[in-house]
Length: 247
Image (cartoon, rainbow, N blue to C red; front, side, top):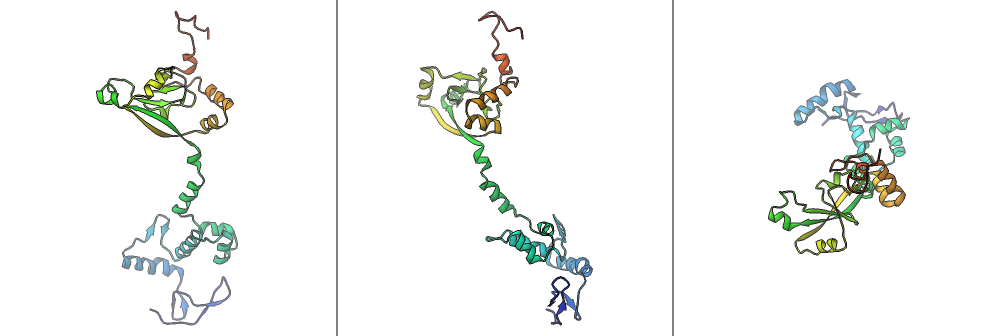
């Protein structure tokens, strides 16, 4: 409670207003407010005198209300806030108006970036291999359906060749009878896994053969989970189907 005082002249608006903190008809100075009164009130209320943005000052309330108005259900625009705060430059208003974490998260979600770069792949889980303990001995138990075959690499989502399979030792082709027979087993668990794609992989999915061939060419010297690169896997094996290439 404080006694009412005469209105004082506001240097910003040129109007006669009632200041919030006055003493004997005169406004209290910012130095006294920030270094004496506010720290005393903080101690009395049991709240810290500073937060992540710095010390609690008389000017912070102005920034708080500006941020709340900017993040309201029907927010004020930056130009409206500039007029309301009495700023000459919009740069000063930008310092006051901060996006709340909730609004920033919603804007990021609405942008749909992750939804655009995520694809689902079918995964077959061989429960019989798991129950029998053969999985612990190295028997494949998880099959990622690539369309033309299966990948048995446990960390398929981290494999750089997942969109351009190099057909290493983890690859199992879909033979005419093997594929349907495997999928018809009663103990198979059919799931789907979401894979976040890189820009190159997304282009290979959406733009067709040319983008896929470009991705394959970029991965020619990238090691597969087995170890050899696709270029090495493509070389003929000595003593089998011909001589190795001189390169």
